[in-house]
Length: 443
Ligand SMILES: *[C@@H]1O[C@H](CO)[C@@H](O)[C@H](O)[C@H]1NC(C)=O
Ligand SMILES: *[C@@H]1O[C@H](CO)[C@@H](O)[C@H](O)[C@H]1NC(C)=O
Ligand SMILES: *[C@@H]1O[C@H](CO)[C@@H](O)[C@H](O)[C@H]1NC(C)=O
Image 1 (tube, rainbow, N blue to C red):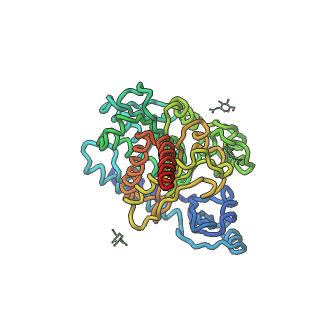
Image 2: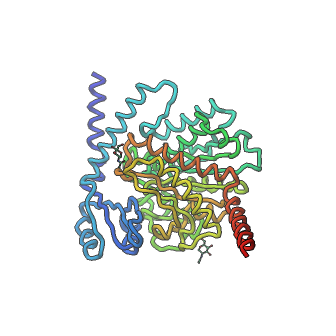
Image 3: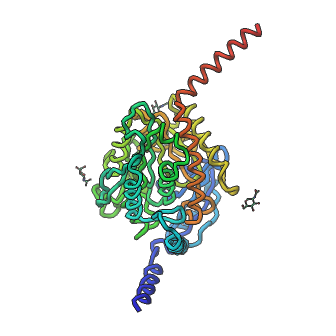
């Protein structure tokens, strides 16, 4: 009887969910880059990608109320469109069912691990998992309660080191995930990296020679909100700015103090890319800032995990020019991308590596640009794959995404290990010297 009641209650909840997106449709649009770029912030762009030189492709959500006028807008310009999801609410209900089924199956067969690569887990489950790792692997892994989110959730920072962060000659790699809370697949990737480094220790050199700092759920309020209320929530859940009654939250990846406040469109609280009332207004973002600053002398690489689009994007997003180590950024990104592409499913589109503004559009206040300006030599926004499912990667694909991405992380970490970025400079000098020798000997 109780069971039946629970089942009915579950059905009622499942049925009533996602009504926010009843009748909303997703369209894949494609057009000249400037036409697509100006849509950022005006429409909910779920992903943008280069199609061919000069043309961008994007995925946009249109509600029934605005659909007709936007489709007309597209037709008046050179923007082609086709519908890829007919009813988002229905797609989300299917996703819920898949996640629940995968979770039940996982719970039935798992013996010793609380987290697997078979579905998505809630914030509390993830925090419990991290605490368990900290007690089991206390010789190399510590979990720091880094601070609280706006709504008071504990944000955990995982620190991995064979020398207790005492060896100041080691480089540090910093990775964060879930700044944008609807990008669910980012957290499993962060957790898998921790697993490979510490639990399975597939490559001991990677922890002998490098210290790691990983934040698997940077925006837990947003993440829980995507589970409870709005699957497409991207921002934090703070309510400390003018207009927050109507439009709570800010875009964490516009809140960093790098050319913050220089673009009018980012100052609108209801915009999906609202930068906040001031730089670092969000406790979640200050936490990332502090982690980077604590390690600034040794931080060799910073990666912010996002989804989706198969891209390694580097600075400067604010103006499209490239930092003085642009060749290293390109080379390192290419190396990681190649390693990932080698393992990707054959239906995957190859990774694109490039300057964020040249590949996509201008951005300000991003973690990638701020960390680069703060002195971390190699920094990226990594847009993970969505395959044919876009941002809503089904649980059955988590395993694939975490494994192929790990291959990229390994490739990047080995470059960092072998003194990475400075090696390239030395290599260039050697090639020039060799060239001179050969040239001289010919004469
Ligand atoms: C709210 O904003 C004020 C003014 O910027 C700031 O002093 C305060 O710390 C903020 N509170 C929270 C909880 O972020
Ligand atoms: C572009 O912005 C960066 C900072 O993000 C700055 O260092 C650089 O000088 C700017 N380049 C140009 C050409 O304005
Ligand atoms: C792509 O992968 C699928 C499934 O693994 C396989 O059936 C198909 O033959 C592959 N196609 C190519 C072109 O390799």
